[in-house]
Length: 171
Image (cartoon, rainbow, N blue to C red; front, top):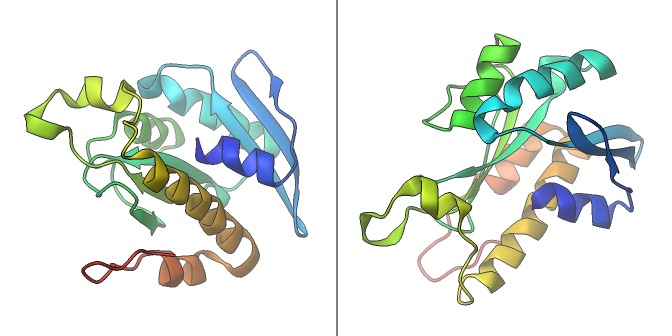
């Protein structure tokens, strides 16, 4: 959803390829390629690996945007390396690239209520009460991508990896 929002903001047009829906263009002076793999989440690694090879992207330049059950809905965390944290899609990318040195933009979705099944939860639509916060975090996710591209990952981490004080909205 963040990449779809980014493509809209950056006026990029999607095209279908056998392995991914993708678009490319410029964000400022940076060339970007957005890709949504046409594979099951736990099989995205090979698609990402082929795209990295095809476009000559170094792993440190790759940005993977993904949901995170362990972050509260609306929270963004940016990391430059690390393990999968239980995320099967990230695990697939780690195995395919054989490195953990790529940027992750984690979008918090929270845990399922009442200890529900996480697999069902991540595939379910957001409820109407969550939609305003979802809209806000999607825009902030694109802001984070723009910050990484234009100012660097360190600046983006300083700006977006913050904790809100009680009652404060992150902006």
